[in-house]
Image 1 (cartoon, rainbow, N blue to C red):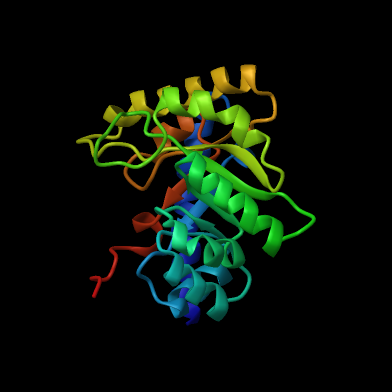
Image 2: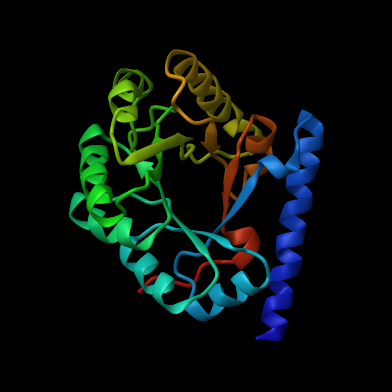
Length: 235
């Protein structure tokens, strides 16, 4: 275990140095970028080693896997970054600290009702997933749809809409992902000008392109392979 923790410390430091370099190129403060360690398919034991190494913000794609890891690790803050089915919304709100993948008004309404029951007295943080690249393989609001829905979503009593998230197209180079990140940043600026209650968080960029995402304004980057190595085969 100590060797594994040290390996995670080195991996974390390497990614943070790359984030800092990207921030320097863009004239940004590295403290404005949160590293979300994507732990999907990795064992709770490895995740605990990662937490012990300082990777305390974790991202999971599946609700059931998140529930298991929240229950069997200590010291992490958990983000759901994968698609959320309506019938798993209650488990998600109970288990994780942030849902980044709110992709419809219907899901937001359901989460608002559940959050009021499960976490009374607080506003539960979410991000709106936007399919800015108009990729038929990706979930999310279209840019026009989110523009039309954001005012209603901000009025939900038990949710706090902290910003936007996108999953980019698979591309051959990190540079090819830049237009997607620019589009999300510009959409955020337009929406916030008209809806001041919308938060400025931008979750975008993964292992292959997070540096470009940081250059274009990402405040959260979702990095798995550069921290955990290749994912084990899923059963």
